[in-house]
Length: 361
Ligand SMILES: Cc1cc2nc3c(=O)[nH]c(=O)nc-3n(C[C@H](O)[C@H](O)[C@H](O)COP(=O)(O)O)c2cc1C
Figure 1 (tube, rainbow, N blue to C red):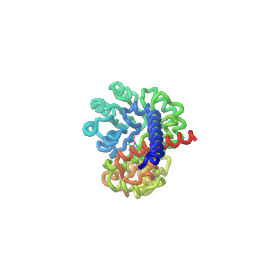
Figure 2 (figure 1 turned 45 degrees about the horizontal axis):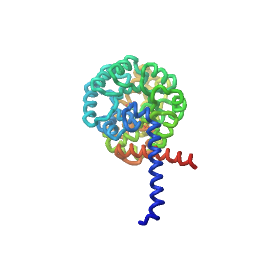
Figure 3 (figure 1 turned 90 degrees about the vertical axis):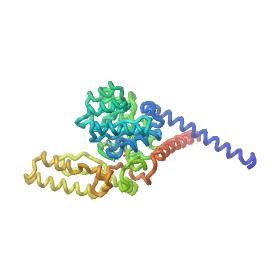
Figure 4 (figure 1 turned 180 degrees about the vertical axis):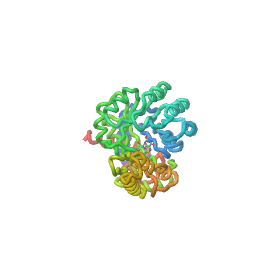
């Protein structure tokens, strides 16, 4: 190739390279409070998912430059201790542990994390007891809380929480009623004291860029990682994700306000249909005087007992609980965690390049 032919291409290549570098630096600047807080290369958290977020997926996310989080769920302190040790054997990078605040052994679980030198404890499932926040912080860990509204975000910060996750109703699993689009506008402009991570419905890097520009410190994704190659979820669970569209991931339906049902977003299947008939039958038995109010409520709550495990581990996607967010429609194949994260980062960088290109024209 002659010089005359090579130079225009070389110039364009050079310009592209420089624009990409600049966009990458801009991304690092935009999520600096997140990466600093997490101690990671990218401010991308793998949201804790019961049965799914164990040693393999968590270490894969952390090894790929993100931040994996173990889902403690209903584990005993001894099981959690073993899971943390097994994760530490697979990664030297930082990862967190998600504890559910209503776990009867919450205080012991916090101590397990502290003894294992876990740097970040996520307290999920409601406003945490201030004693748990204090114990975690006194033991040297950072605490991440979930803020479903601005007043609660402020309250959590007053309690000493070091970072927040705001999770929109688009997310998989147990959800609140408000979308991330609205939560982000209500909360991000008003909270600057701590990093705020956004979650729910995120599947692409350009969406992450948008939230960073609104003031977020990073993003938490669950659904995309559940279908990752390193996730131990059953192949049928992952296939169900690949087949599904956004509109298939619906929240559980409550038939009677006297018997509250906690909204859980998952793929509609035989199980979710049967849940409706189960509620209707339980209501009939309550009205006929066969069950007390408390007994009827328990009957309804027990319907899903063990059903997430059945779907994730046993692959029963017909009657199990296939928890998934609306972002499931953008899960197209089983990808490695590294591919998912580099795709997200690339899309975030390209979004920034497009914006700076528009500014220059
Ligand atoms: C299968 C599944 C199980 C989940 N389990 C938990 C859990 O045990 N604790 C928790 O705090 N969040 C849980 N989540 C929520 C995720 O941590 C994350 O915030 C959510 O998936 C983000 O939304 P996305 O699914 O649209 O990415 C779960 C989500 C899924 C899909």
